[in-house]
Image (cartoon, rainbow, N blue to C red; front, side, top):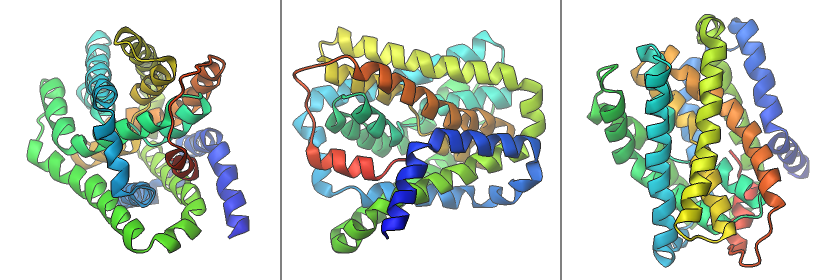
Length: 326
């Protein structure tokens, strides 16, 4: 277990580099990962189950203890990123498949890696976790509605089908993880250090699969879609930080909201795109998976230099989130 824990820490630390290398391999040798596409939904379920295993029902009390802060973060998440995605799709006149893919990235909830990046940025980790939990729970309802409203002009969207997809691959695995933590807590505590390794493996295979089946399309539109994904992500950080500052949140909370808004659950976006819109629509999510881990590390490093004496964190939540990094 000690060796696995060290390996887990290594892959977590260098996740962005690993994902980038796998994406390059899948791009130039598609056959190396085409086999994995049929397992993508299952792999995302494993990631969500792992997230659930790090949570307790008591963790949800954070949402009710700090409703204003969480509300600001959740509203920012479900307004800034979707509207940015829609605006970029319109501004660059993207074809329907890519447009819906970009919008899906924007309408998905925050990713769990944002919690670790917030810690590295010396931000309010408890707030980051609370926002992630809130947006994830709301995702089955809000993500289909926003996607239908914003992307409906490009493609036909079934609200019920998207709701069921998110419920099956996000809500059910997380609930099972929480139940597992409740009744098998000792086992979970002994094995939790290995969860980042499992999570990174799952994300790497998801990215490899999507890139492999979309290699030709990526070659054709690569620079454009990479530029759009980068712009989407960076504007998310900036606008999230600005909104948090305007609403009077302190610096540690501003860091949390900025990172939470900028970093998306791109694995969910990728899976939904494959299930409902095809491989081309999954390209933005796959690229986002690579890029936001790189940008998140850079942004966290920059923000960590900005100190705040009113830092508010929950030590137990920090420990859990550092041990589980998507």
